[in-house]
Every structure is written in structure tokens, then in C-alpha cells.
Image (tube, rainbow over all chains, first blue to last red; front, side, top):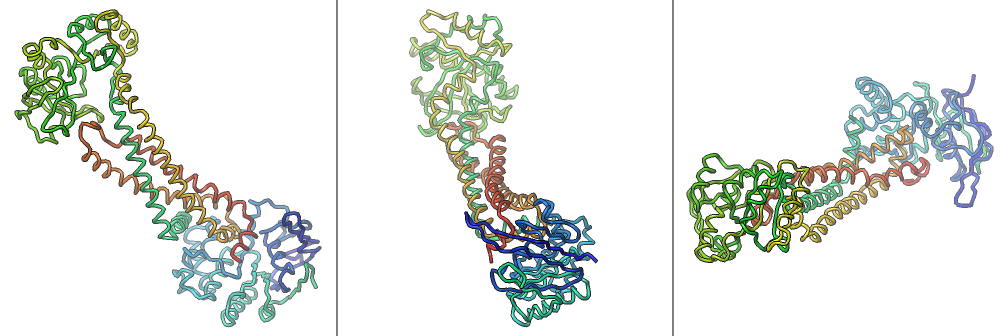
Length: 223
Length: 386
């Protein structure tokens, strides 16, 4: 069976003025569909860079990245934006919710790019908010929610458009232990119950234990 | 609709900043509106000029009179329909601060040449019949609470003595920019008294106004009129009414030019105020724009979000400003002497110009933030907060 994510011989070099900083060095990685993968490594090891490349928010210097059959390294800016809206759900460390929108409106944001009817959008938003346990908080603004609750809204936003792949960049990094545990349980449930493929970057070994596969990166290479 | 909701919520996110920006724009729009109104009021005489009227004055200066006898000769020029005339009377009504135009005219021909001054048939008949009668513009009658039958005493200066007039008509406007601040009375009334008291000044006319049949012939007719009196004791200068009025305005050209310039400087100020707000907002939201891009929102969406925010603030500021301009201009119109700006209204063109300026400012103020948002990579944008 073809892996959902195929990273082949990827090199990423950042250029700062005349200085070239190699971040990823000939990385290859396969992630099967339905997998829950954790990427670990010290700061500067290139794990977030790899995550950015897989999710199509950055482009490799060389190599190919095929996600669900599409070589995303060959897509232009606007095609990538469309591709991301259909295939990727993001969960950021600092939630990154729009402060002027309610939990409901934040979750609905990705659906504004779809052709779903108003009724369908409403059903989907209410359903995912129920899954993350915030059905009773949908009219609350981010500042009226705790960190854990905000992250759950962010997860609801990430899954509302039913993406192929969920990307988590330190999703528990800003949370206390209890809230972090709740988020990990939720991600585990999305993976096991809803068969979602998840790639998560984390520093926290406890969080990484929830994943079925753990990869360690160091100085731009898998250890 | 959701997009609009996001745009509105973002525009008013920092309530105090949004409020101050809106107030800044509103004040600038008001200032622009008032300045433009003053400029248009200054030009009102020019704008209300008719294309089929020629004005003939003394070639050396407007202050020197012309002989009454010229009238017959001008009438004979081919293409001339009617000739009327007038004298600037000056004088004082109540006190020297009560300024409005007081003119001696020919009642038989004046209203034919100036159809925009509307009198009822009865009023016109009564005015023609009674030599010491006068008619007033509606604004002057209202200001001094004068009614038909009231007596007005004018203390003469150019024409010395005490002059008594009976109000026999109050004219109304045909057009929006018709001057409603004039007092008109019989030229003959003045002339006959001059014949008795100062015979040397009798039979003099301030200027002639000629109604012509075809405005396209104005140059040829003007030339022909002036040729009639070439090498005479009082040579003439004939020009279109517009050119004649323009001559008065040109004398104040520097002031009007400065006002015009200032009105556009104000537009520049609005642009800076809104531009500053938008740049601050966009910089604070670099991370949010990166998140939106991450979610799949395109460059077009970002242009709509940022441009929309800028437009919302500009439009609200513009609407508030325009709404305040009306009462302010009306207030100024009531305070300034009626005769100084006979027509002091907000022109439709001023409203359109202010509205378009506000919209353009909205667009211009968002250009830099949009450029910045589009050219910041998602990775850099996300790191902006991290």
C-alpha cells in the first residue's frame, strides 16, 4: 500500500543574506495512512521545518514530497493554498485563533473556502465542537476560554473540513499537564476512532508516547 | 456574509483606535467639505452665469459709467434680443454691517434677461407701476423680516441722500444657485432725482446686460458692440457674463487657490491617518494573516480582508464626516453676512468629491499593508509571534 506521505531525499537550506544554513539533509520518510507519528528532537534539529514542508507551507530546496498522490513541491503558491485547504488541518502551539471571532466562527473559518451550504456548515461545526467537548462554548470568544479549551477549538478547526492529514506543531507545548493530557487523548481519539493520519512535533516524551511511531531528528537527519 | 463579518469585526477590533481614526477622517471630510463649499460659493456667480448674456462695461474700469444713450445702439446689433442695464447703488441699510447688493435696474427688461429671478405676475406689475418700489431676494426679506408694503430707508453714499423704498415683491429662485440676496429698484427713480439734484450724473448706466439669440455668436456680437463705441468718450468692453463674473473671482484667485490646495492637503492628511492605522493593524496581525494563508486563504482573500477593513473605516469616517458637514455649512451660512456669499450650499460635486476621496483613501491606505501581508512567507509570518 502506498504511504500517504512520501518524503524523498529532501534537502532544505535557508539563506540569510549571503549565509546558507542547511536545515534538512537528504531526508526521506514514509507515513502510512491512518498513522500517528511523532517527530522529536532538540531545538534547531529541523523537525518544524520538516513539518512545514509536509504541510505545504514551505518548499524544499531539493527532493520531492508526495502527499496523497500529489507532489506538492511542484505546486505554485495559489495551487498550494487550495491544496492545503482540502488536505491539511493545522494545530499550532499557541492555538492561533482569531480573537474577534467566537469558537463557532473560528471553527467555521476553513469552511468559508468550501461550497458547502449554510446548513451543512452549521452541522459540521456543531458536530466537531461536540467531538472536542465544547458544544456548550461555541459562542465564547477565545479570551473567554482556557488554554486547553482554545486548543480544542483549534483542533476542531483543523478537522472540520475533514482533511487528509493533521499536522500538530507542539500542540501541548503551551498547556499545563492536565490540559495537555486532554489534548493528547483527543488526538489519539481522532487517530483511532476517526482514522485520521497525524504528524506531531513535540519536545515532550510523554506526549510522543501517544504516537504509534516516533522519529528523532538531529542536525537535520534522522537518528 | 461571514467574510464581511470578519472584516467588520477586525476593523473595529481596537475600539479606541478605530474610533479615533474614524473621528480623524470625519473631521478631515468636514474640513474638506467646508473649504470646497467656500470655494464653490466664491465661484457661484460664475456658475450661475447664462451663456446667452453679455455684459458691457466701461473699457477702462467697471467703476466708470456708460451713457444711457448706448442702449438704443446696442439694441440694433444683429443677434441681440433684449438689453437691460443696472447701476451699483451701494448705500447703508440700518448700519454698515448689513451688506447686500443694492442695484438700480430697469423693471421693464431686467426680469426678461434674468428669468431665474421669479416674481409673481402681480408683484411684477406692482413693481413696474410704482417708481419708488423695490423687490427683494427671499433670503434678504427673511433676514430682515420684510414683507410686501414695508418701507426701507437707504442712506446713500455713491448716490447721496436718504432714499425710501416700498417693498412690492419678493423674488424666489428658479435655479439652486440663484442669488437671493439682492435688492432691486427703479433706475429711473434714481436718475430722475439725480437730474434735479446732480444733473451732471444723470443719464448714466453702470453696465449693460444684453440677451442674445445665439450663444455661439457671443464673440462676434461682443466685438460688434465694442466697435460701435470705439474712439468715443466712453469706450466699452463686452464679454460673456461668465467671463465678467470670472474677472471678480480672479481678483481673489490666490485665496481660492490656497483654499483649493488646502482641501487636497486635507485628503493627504486623512490618507496618512488611515494609512498609519492600517499599517499598525497589519503589523500586529502578521501572524493571523499567516494562519489564514495556512488554512488555505489565498492572496485575493487577504486583499479583501485588509482592503475591506480599510474601506470600512474610511466609509464610516466619510459618512460621519458628510453627515456633520451639512449642519456645519448651514451654521456657517447663517453666521456669515448674507451678501458676502449669496449662495452658500454644499454642491453635489463637493459631496461626490468628498465621498470618492474617502474611498480612494481607503484603497490607498491598504496598499502597503496588503503588499506586506502578501510578501511575508507563512513561515516568517508564523515566527513573527513565536
